[in-house]
Length: 384
Image 1: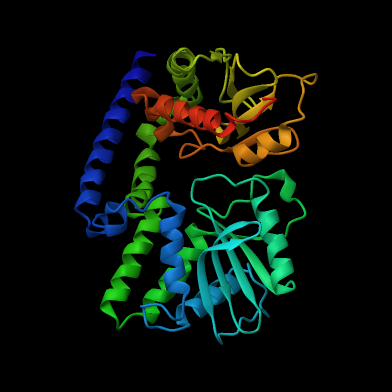
Image 2 (image 1 turned 30 degrees about the vertical axis):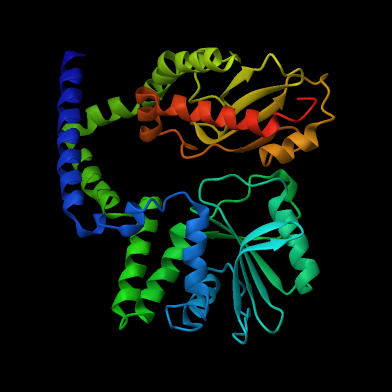
């Protein structure tokens, strides 16, 4: 046992040394200078939508007319998102931002003189609003006589979390693949225009950073090779076998105390107890709100292993009054037939970053802020 502990300690020191040195290399890389990152263009959908709309607009300041738009459509065809026979005429193309419809504001709407349309709903970290895609699909069918495509753009090409969208047709588009491939093609198109080209490269690098494809992520191959050596294998497997225990330890001994603190600070009651959160399906946390008769606040992982975290409201039991549920669901911003919820921001999958956020208190602050947002959204709703 002592020998195993010494080997594990030695490996941890070597890995820490490796990570620190690689971090220094990454910091020296010119890719780290990025105006999009400096200006805080991270999870703000509106800013990303403005950038995308400018590039897609044939009449915009980039002066490449419809070439970027055509590259976008061809990329979606190449990735089998659009069918190979799909065509979009480039006569009288108009690109609208925050387009107002009777069913809400579309992030981006692209139209032409043939009454074709691309409807783009852009999501980085924010959750869907109530029946959002369903409402936009209704608008598209009414306005464009079904000559439209509804695109749901997320970092990873996720499905919409709303169960109510089972019959709604929409196309899943990702930043990590579709947008990056499109931007690479745009860079080629803009090769002789230095300002446009370098701006595209910087934005592409920023997307790579948001989707963990930046220079820093390339060091994983070197680290894997190092960990695969015979002298390190025992320590590697000892560490890997204890990762779940480490996560549970931090949740049970640090986070649960923080949840109790949140309860005292907001006059609510934490109902979470110590258990194996990592290996339990539908694991999560809950709060009882004394002023609410029918609902509790809950945070729940949709997949085992602390993945796909949501936050919202759930009925206290099967006997409570749920007559206000449709209003609650709309105010919260999404959900299914029983619960009102949205995606938890930033830390939807709890790995190293989330564990560090628990230790330094950032997770507590974020959970508290999200609960306060729920209170604000529901303050005028009766029957909660």
